Amino acid sequence: MRTCRRFERIKSGFERDIRFMLNHAERHQGSTSGKVSQTSALGARQRMAKALSRHFQHCRECG
Image 1 (tube, one colour):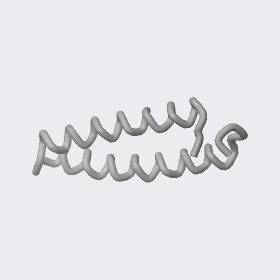
Image 2 (spheres, helix red, strand yellow):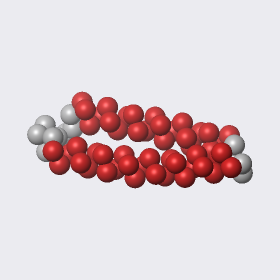
Image 3 (cartoon, rainbow, N blue to C red):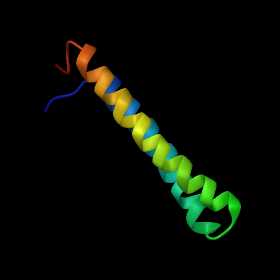
């Protein structure tokens, strides 16, 4: 599957945020902030999938 630069930029931005949240959750395991960060990372994954899917449907270069 060939993708455009914008697709890669969207994906890398979400992946960076998810990695940050998961690292925070790992460092603060068991605390409230760690649990919230873990939940936020899961939500970010879902938002990333939705954003990439939407982009792929509308982008002439990716589709």
